Length: 183
Image (tube, rainbow, N blue to C red; front, top):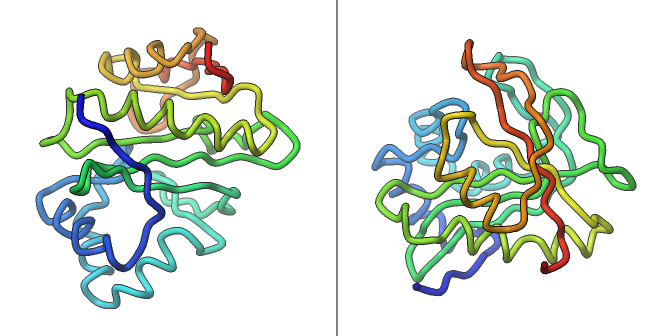
């Protein structure tokens, strides 16, 4: 298995992120934002990168704007851009606002999938969660996303029921608690 690293988003890596967008990858698993992000990035790369991780509000798939939670965001690399992973949270509590499905979200570019990168990236971000005081984190995946379910289970995920899926009628999100301490 190839080793990966988690890197902080940066201008140096922005061309690789841009290439992934141009190839149709979307960093958002609930809606395709690749074209919109590509347009914004090409208009003003520095402003795009700043807004991507520092704007006070984020737009939900239903169009609502909600406050951005504190987060640790990373891009995944094996020497080339592979995807993203992020840990969002509210300080001092495991609770999340209703508009947030879970603490951790990740996505791998299609041409790098099925290499164990998401499993490794999740394992690598758990110490960041632990450093923020979390003994466990909530992670969800679509009920028909078997690869993501396997990633979560490989990292010690314990089923915690389901939550309604707001963008896919007839589907639910499977919820799992994942311990931040190695098992």
